[in-house]
Length: 526
Image 1: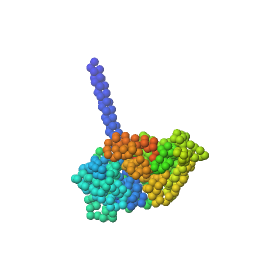
Image 2: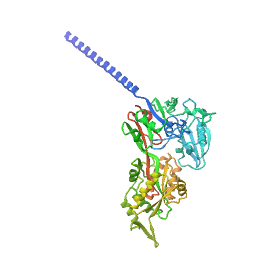
Image 3: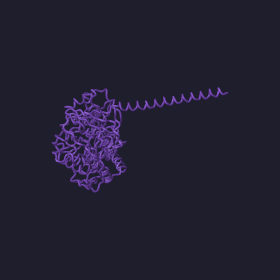
């Protein structure tokens, strides 16, 4: 019995030793696994390579270079930024409030430091706006209605305007520069423009003739976001063609462009891409006070008779996007709604027939009070814009096949603007570079392009400019789009394409828009 007991004890001892050994082995394996994961994280390339063609200056409010404007969003910050769906979001400003029709009170973020360690204050805001008023800048438009900046305290400014600007906060998207950094310098010509300080995610560390190096800004105020990319090398090129070729051979990780012929430079393989609607919006404006075009059914019939996809494919080779509304480029106020009547020639005929028009001998005509009217309309276009002339000819061909006669009026640039301003046109083929602001006064406000008045849209315009409640604004814009679709004062035709191409090895949430390429950069790596 004793020997059996000793045998059991021995077996138990051996089992315990085996279990302990297994535990130790597994612990070692777990430690090795964690080390491997850590090493894997370390092995991730934490450098991003970007490019600038034909650098003028890295100072973002002096530069006219689109590459600089894009990359500057990593170095400098605005008072108000935009989300991926173009909604205003606090940045260096934490709050804004409309005090009167022509004044805004802006509360600034405290404890923000420039990359050289100096404090950001209200003085920097006034300094930047003053410079924008003095120099020719792509951002000068943003402050053209600013008459003065009152400093309430170190972190509060009051901005005074010469008139009411709906959604003025969307114009506060220009980069802010440091007053102290430029104190006593010739702002336009100082050597400090080679390496200005910012409050953004990255700072300029090295400046060489052929490249810049950006590193993480350890003074950045947003400690909640941990940046994976440690360094960004910005290679400098003499031409955009050289930049594209550098991307093609892998020396640049990301390029954003509106170039229609990008594939001719970089090919079609070896990279990923995101395509989205750009800022250039082309549309038809009806003179709604015209004897024929004041009739809603005529505008609707024209809308039903235009095949936008035909325009996009036959004239632009599908290098642009058809559009249905000025804000349908991804703006939060136009999502989920189609403002287009659609292409439906039978519906075009029906809407005219229902309103007493008769198709006779290739013409639509209507007799009222012994007077017969035929649908014959002038289409105004700039003669200097060959692609617009081609669009006008395409529209003429489409409409005339439906019995709607079009005479194309090709005007010089000056004459075109005069006709547009004086409303001396029937239909005008227009283009507009869209603002980040969702303000639609150009289309629906007093003196709008289409000479259009609708009491309900007028009320909506007044209501949205006097509230900051996003739910109310969204509700009103839903209604506005419905009226646009029904009343047809304009026909949105197409937007250009904005393309972002990037190295397929670049990992992370890459969701650019034409305002900013670098949403989610804190999680990028290769």
